[in-house]
Amino acid sequence: MPGQVREELLSRVVERIAEQGVGALSLRRLAADLGTSHRMLIYHFGSKEGLLVEVVREIERRQRSALAGLEFDPASAPAEAIRSMWRRLAVPALWPYERLFFELYGQALQGHPGTTALLEGVVESWLDLNVELAAGRGVPAEVARTHARLGLAVVRGLLLDLLATGDRAGTDAALEAFAASYEAGLPVPPAR
Amino acid sequence: MPGQVREELLSRVVERIAEQGVGALSLRRLAADLGTSHRMLIYHFGSKEGLLVEVVREIERRQRSALAGLEFDPASAPAEAIRSMWRRLAVPALWPYERLFFELYGQALQGHPGTTALLEGVVESWLDLNVELAAGRGVPAEVARTHARLGLAVVRGLLLDLLATGDRAGTDAALEAFAASYEAGLPVPPAR
DNA sequence: CCACTCCTGTACCAAGTGGTACGTGTACCG
DNA sequence: CGGTACACGTACCACTTGGTACAGGAGTGG
Image (cartoon, rainbow over all chains, first blue to last red; front, side):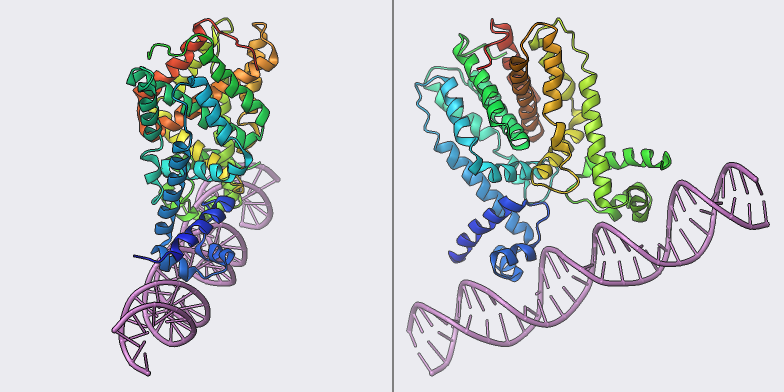
């Protein structure tokens, strides 16, 4: 059982990596920025890939806690649910972590070792959550899955847009157009 | 000025990179795979970054030609437009290039040199196209921009999903749910 | 023949990489 | 006190990296 020093080190590592990206990552530079030696990173994480794995896990953990923290009002319309999700994610303070998420996502798609675990629950876990929530309102599971999938795509797609353009107003408007469509009489279109 | 040898080399480079990703790219390995020496890549592209720039340009070029090739029927509903776009992009033959696109996107978000040019027109050019098309149907520019933004986000978000999960049926259904919402009586909701 | 341009390969370089060997300090526990 | 486990640093290693120097080879035009 490794000490708790590691945990504190990891969070500082994630912070640094969120700023500098993971593509041009070097243990030595990272260690220097953290005021230690690259030997320590190897000591605590075994290898560079081991460190990467831990970073990916941490990012996943944060996603999951963000997901759990959504505290949907089960009675609220889907429109309100997606609005609150967007409100939470679009704030500039999270941009570095979202950039990191998409960078890791891209590397994972290419099979980069250590990152591929990201792909496991990156979609499914969100769908499952929504199925559960929707069941409370009597929505069939298949329909809930499809709409969760769509909502997730909208949010991720608009985040990609926002991170590239910085256009908060434009992306806000697009999300609002999407949310509004759920209030305009078709809360649950047929699944196909 | 450089000969046409370069052009042919570039397309082979892009092909290889689409398969192997750009993250773990090394001039020597790439050259070996291409049956030449890394010296040649430097000769034709000046440097590794120069090669990357060219690859990014090539990807942009393909995106643009895909965009131009969409040949929308101006009279057709937006639902049909987005369906045809998805039908074109979701085919497995394009997956390697889309993986590469998202990998480069991620690197560009982190400011990786040589890739940042990707971000320039990655959103705007699509929006402009849609504004132009929508003008023909009397749709105000602002509304057209917002809905183009949303549609682009849906497609990119679902592509991320598809590349991670491989679930063609699931993503097809989600896109269909989105497209159908345009046929259910709200072709042009207010922009905000 | 020469000269010139384009193209390609071999050999080499300095720099940086991840990883290891080894020694040290520090704290807790007997 | 001694021992032992954790934490940490320095020096080093083999290897790979992007880039360069240099030497041609193939074709063309004079």
